[in-house]
Length: 268
Image (cartoon, rainbow, N blue to C red):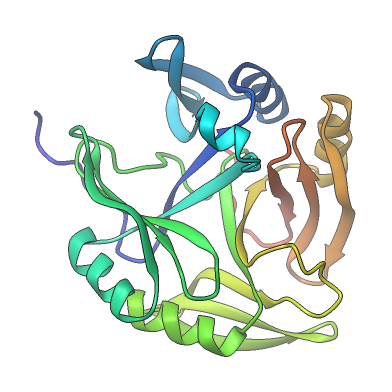
């Protein structure tokens, strides 16, 4: 085992992982859409944990959903990981704050240590304490995860949970017809939150949405459709923020794309 790598700062989103009904078809969709390379790492009989790569650097991952989950009608989904300094301490704290520990904490070989959490409002996420793998090696660039947004049915409770768990500070930003919550670390935004209104279908649980940065939202949405995806929310402007679209991939996993109007996306 080599020396531990320098981890992402505590409280920052550091990794994104797709659990999909069809590994082969999912890989084809995302590598085409985001021009990603891939590194298939064997994890069983004809099973792979695929590192999705930008110019050889790991930016996300994907794997085939286990058969028993597929039979149980678990939808394809993206899972997001937040970097922490001490997974075990945070898992204990999350439980004290009313969350359910779904899996872990446990080591992922020598890559790092993780725990999967279902928070009190029903959104799933993971915590990651990196060792040999710190997570995404190209944060804040085109064709990488750029923003993370919680859709919550109880904004007050969600603010309290995440701020107590991770040390985030919350800031309310009035936006078109709604209050948007920014979660900050030392004044710098790391995530956002919207409150799910009665207009949202009752069967949609609270969830974390991943936004991938793209150079042209309209072109990327069109490309996603050509590749078999569905455009759920057509490209839409958010004043002073950017242009976004919500996409469902051919296997049913939901994600968003965004062309930022701010100068914080690197084009490398």
